[in-house]
Amino acid sequence: MATTKRTSDEVSTCNAQRIRAECRKQWCHRATTCVCPACEHEAYCSPACMREDAAGHSQTCGTADAARGTFDLLMLLATREPVAPSIVLSPACLSTAFAVLGLAEDAKCRGLIADQFGDVGHARAVAHATAVTVTAASSIWLSGFGADHPDLLAAFLHDAKTIAGASVHTDVTLENVNAWVKEATKGLVPTILSEIDADTTMLIVSALVFDASWAVQFDPLLTEDAPFHSPAGDVACRMMYRGGEELSILRDSGFYGVKLDLQTPESREGYSLAVVVVARDDGQCPSASQFHQVASGTHAMEANLYLPITYASFGPSNVAPELCAAGLKPLTQTGHMAADPRTSLSRVVHRALLKLDEKGAKGAAVAAVVCVTECVHEAPPTLRFDRPFGLTVVAYRGENPVATLFAAFITDPSKDRW
Image (cartoon, rainbow, N blue to C red):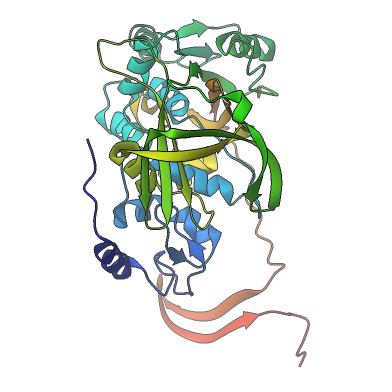
């Protein structure tokens, strides 16, 4: 179904109403310098404020959709380095791992996952309907989880096997986990973890692999060397070409895109696969709304297409901090986890690979959710005021402060001796 498009004047008016001169993060009034993670406008004073407010603004600016967490996560990961390398993620793989974690009948848990990464049911159905093209697998590795809650453990394992089709393992070693990953990804991802902490009580590992040919393939004889304008400067690439035919394209103010169909087995459910490619005129990462417009609102038109042969990889890397900033808080207080207060989410390790060439598209991904037993005795915090600090001298009446006698901001405590 095609999306309803707004005129450029309507878009400009809408944008003007929501763009602020000051950072939109609550209580921050500094001037904006950073592009917001959900649309293409400046709304934050720093990457730190942008990370902290990513989830809230994705709703406020009106670009929220079923996969907005994907693009929030891309933007947040891109701020890890001044010049971000290529980043590839698998929302379906991540959401499947979290869905296994929250398999109890908990609508809040399921809704949180779907809100950030799309309907997990669709991801599973696509893998089932296109088994030749897409394969998915999940596994649970137990090392003490649920030992004090046998009813919880029995319910969890029953759901994991019957609903998610997950395999259950108790021989939790680094070699066994990585061997499962290598087999599940057909050797494309040989390892996901470099170590397993001694306090790990459960691992949930999901894998996704797909390999599909273009419905209309590129002619290798037309592939030529060409420059690619990366943020770090022009680099050489191999540019594929298709021309003299109708393509599903969209050209809008500031961005353009194409939807390229992939060959998939016929499915009674009507599932199919396509690669959606979007580029902005300014070279920045496209927003969720721009991807959505191209994915659902293209029209057939004769066009010339130049698309580089592309290789992208990410990880293995812990994406838990960015997942939290994007709105997907660790699911330790929903589903089965709520009944075992000792257990908390420690890391979410993700690895993803993607390739586009003249034949088609190929990719693999793994997500490992690491749950640990929290230590009962925590080390006392250390407060070291070895940088500029503020202080006040306050008069109290009982427990209530009633007057400030002095207030100071100290940048050098050794100066102004008296």
